[in-house]
Image (cartoon, rainbow, N blue to C red; front, side, top):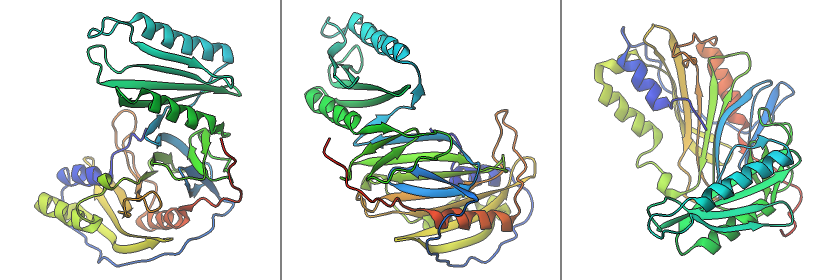
Length: 348
């Protein structure tokens, strides 16, 4: 899952530790058109979308949901290891007792011909209000695991929903760098693809570490539900942040802000740089479209952050100037697009 801090957190942390005066750069509205990726970029597939980053960049984390089902990270393993893992899960659930029913936590275990294994159990051992569905499938040396939670009277619905997703699933080459971009309609996740021409409730978020710049990463969030939408547009919220920080916000230098359209998606961007506790400056760029709360027009947020902390908590010095960071930002943001498809998907 994404492990890096968001733009608002970065600005708040940097501003609260900052000293010195503000060097404000007047904000300008900007717009863009879609650009094609070149041989110097790598293309990443997430959900039904694509984004290009400098070649050699790697995926460092991601979260994916398809039809409300959580997709766990794909793991490489032999079929024997797969059977052992599923068997242990089933055995543990079967031997555990629900304190309310005094019966097994395991409610259902099904094995399908294509190697799919389905398990249904109570979510917790002291309640019968919620059921967890586990869906396993082994394909070509990789274990795929889908998880769903449903109300106690929706067990059959949950099992069927997970089973349908597993039946449409196929592996994709490489989980760190995407080299296998599907041409069929469907949902991409790290190491796999669910083929389906119909839109489902789909969410994706991922972090990509930028090649050649160990302090820099790009984050992307795609979430279609209206409940995820913010009460105010991005620039209004950033203005509120500045008022909240007061004089501490004077160390934040705004490089650019304004309305910006990316492909068919109208949105807003906010590009800023701020110092950390050791005086080194970092970049925090964000673009956001609130969407219409539908699957075809999801809410989307894209960020570029530089100077983030290493594994020991030390802030890294950014290797990008303001101009270089803005050039990288424009290239990445302009590349974001809906993945083109050429063939319909046959029924599952």
